[in-house]
Image (cartoon, rainbow, N blue to C red; front, top):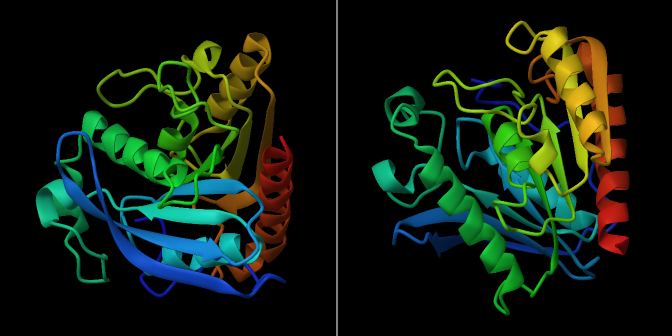
Length: 257
């Protein structure tokens, strides 16, 4: 897991507190109905944000994060990954993640992401044409790869918290090998003390982005562990605050076009 069950985003309430939020059900192209959470600002910036969680799926950490984005004017939707195996619903602390995680497929993940993007671009979702993905761990990898030309989303940007850039366990190419396919700017926020994503993998990712001419910012926080972006990680509050400032600045640029 990327965080404890009682963790929360280390993000203060934003200046724009008028937000309407609710659970919704989306339908993927294969007909799967899955849960999502939508936070809609009263005074929208024009930007939509698709939040892609870690393996917990639609969990309260990400629901709160969606509200923080909306308080800054960004219409946010959180995707759940487990509609195919657990039905449409929010995931609580007793959800057997490991049992369902092994049944995830790349096609299913991309189909659910596509449904969220389509929702934000629909009249019901506010017809947001400028969209950013923001993901964590497995969601961070997915968020960045959603910015490829082949994905076809035409994103205004991608944000990956501790996104895994190297090939997958099955040898599937990750963001490093696919950097030349990326058409959206990338903000990658990495942990300096993350055995699962060693420094050489981060360096290779940054080099590949530069070689491909992709607009990017790769920030590594020295000594920060995987999933440092957590109110319970008090020793890394400064890193979290800096990461959030960068995310808001990146989103602001994306909204402005």
